[in-house]
Image (cartoon, rainbow, N blue to C red; front, side, top):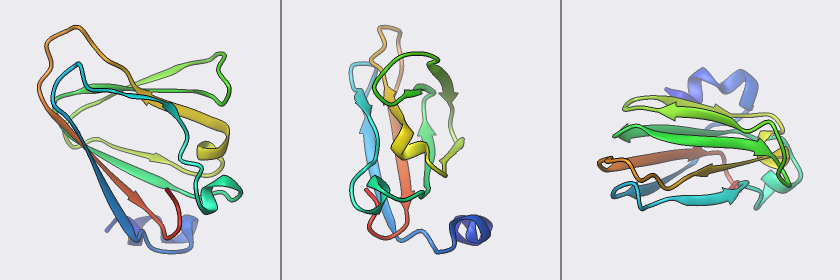
Length: 114
């Protein structure tokens, strides 16, 4: 359904699926951009489905600086990063000291994007 919905913009189907499991607020992922494969030089798209407890996903321009955007992703939320986002912005899921249960992040990507 994601491939069909984004076909006109993406021009190809999503081909791979990745999973990240966050057990609690101590699990996190540092600032990064998915710039391996074609994503290093071409506009592409990554769709992230959030399952489980809400967690923040932060976005900032590549190399740091402001603005930092904060998106609280809850159960069933879909965040789509398209265009030049992967090359020009970094994203992170920070640690949190507040009580938070498990979350799974499901990432959909087209071929040769990681």
